[in-house]
Length: 105
Image (cartoon, rainbow, N blue to C red; front, side, top):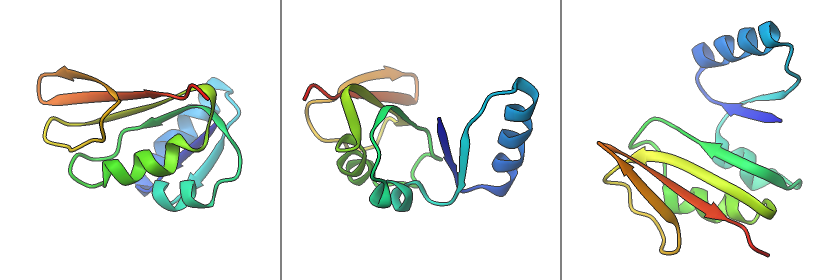
């Protein structure tokens, strides 16, 4: 399990929560796009929930979907106004939408 987080306050809470639960995970302090661009491993699931309006979702999708294992999922939460590529399973919840990409091959 790997967490990538850019906000120092969130990193602090994340570290405390992992310690309390005893969960073992790598924590990367930095930008998710930079992390994904340099990643060589594959992932079963990638969850992305950055602050709304702060990320190029199409760019994230392009970077992340190539790192998913077969059957893996990319789940992205964003504001309703975000533009996304075709072929994603998109669900709307009030002012929020969640897009899911399933890697089939």
